[in-house]
Image (tube, rainbow, N blue to C red; front, side, top):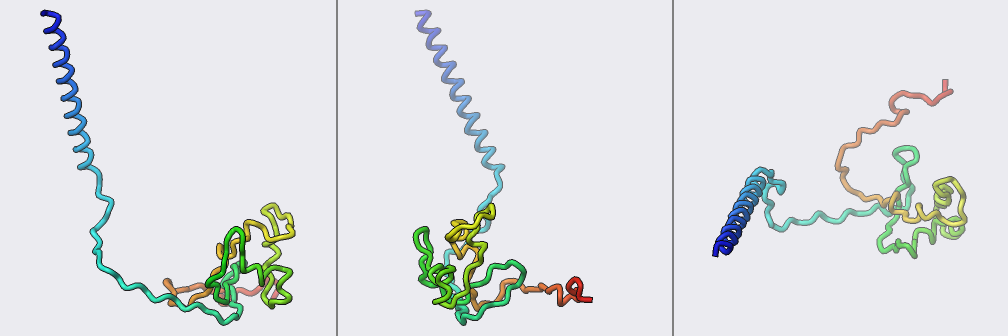
Length: 163
């Protein structure tokens, strides 16, 4: 009988320790949860908002002046419906070196035929294959930010050796 009482006391002590541990854990996490700042921000309304109209693309096929040296030229025509995937690039059907004579389109730069190490390739470099990564069509929209850029010639700086 005595051994059974010891066993019961041992189980009841373990239960007490387990209950105490669980209360400490629950109480501690509740305290931690109260200290975390709210990250969701103010509640937003679920009303429907009218979408902005789609911009009108500039499709006059006139080459645009570049804003800075080495700027990728903008695309002066619509590219809607052009397929540009790993297997197909419709841009190359007019702008690739061998097709420019018939299409009248400007040839893509020779840098598009180079590897990163400067080695010339027979075909367009894979890193230059996806044209719209750098070249974008021009939209007729109001600028988001006012442009205050001034060219060096407008600031009174003369080219070297012009004196």
